[in-house]
Amino acid sequence: MNEADLQALAQLLDGFGLACSLVDADGQPLLANRQAAQLQAQRRPGARPAALRLSDGRRLLLAEGDRRPANDGAEVRFRLLAEHSMDLIVAVDADLAIRYASPATRTLLGCEPADLHGHTLAELLVPEERAAFIARHFTKAAQRGAGPDLFRTLRRDGGTRWVEARVAPLPPGNGLGDYLVTMRDAEQRRRTEEQLGQVNAELSALASTDALTGLPNRRVFDATLNKEWFRALRDAQPLALMMIDVDRFKSLNDLFGHQMGDAFLALVGKVIRDNVRRAGDMATRYGGEEFAVVLPGTSATGALEIAEIIRRAVAAADTRPIIEGGYPISVSIGVAATVPLAGGGAAALVHSADAALYQAKRNGRNRVEILH
Image (cartoon, rainbow, N blue to C red):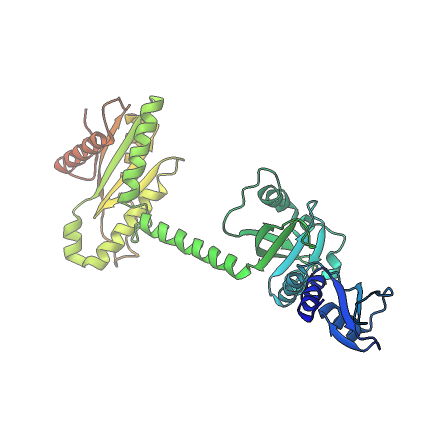
């Protein structure tokens, strides 16, 4: 066996975890593979090596070396990364028993990694979210999404913390467990989402509310009237509509200015809102000095009664807080009511209420009219 053959044999045996060394007839070392070098450096006690004497007197010595699995280096790298990660990394078995927890437990949960030994992953979550988390990630029908899930964990001090949780299955024989769970602090993300939700709600309110009167705007009126029309059509119930216009508003604007005119409009809007109190009824600012009130489930008689209440309330409104000594203000109201029929539409109801409003204007203002 020449030197090249001996080198190849040493490398082959090294891959199998066997220490291979070559000594001369006097026992002086001539060659050693990695396993043999590690055994000598660490002075590890072991079984007596097997010796094979070659024809030239040299001896080939074989012994059991380090039989750590081939993926041992990968496991070392994983633990090195996990030990220094700000994310909490947890390895669990199929029954969710915790096999490993990284040091981030201290910052995320307020406890030591060793405190989690003997516990399950489910115990880290608030009780009301455990079932959803397990169903999402650990059942046969689990549908894992591409992104993380938001869940709340329990802290040692009794508090909770939002985390982004990711779950990934591990290959068999990895030495860690069946699943790897990563939890990242999501408190800031949750606060940001809540703030964004609040901003979106405020923007939605601004988009649907008249800034001057605080009433729903024309956009909401159109959507609501259309919805109530089809509901009344389905249920064969009456639907009524009032169109309300502030009398001689242009003259009032010319006399006192637009800023004062806006104050009068805001007052009229408040009076209307205060007198439209039934659930389902909706007062809106239709545009300019015109208002509209949708009255689901209301007949012509009921609508006329509500309209008269509003007309009187506006006429009796105290305008002295707006202008010294006060100034008389009134509204004209057109009323329309019908039981919707197939083939019709809400536009016909608006047209009828508008026509009644103009009739109230022609007949002297400060009055309620309905077309017969």
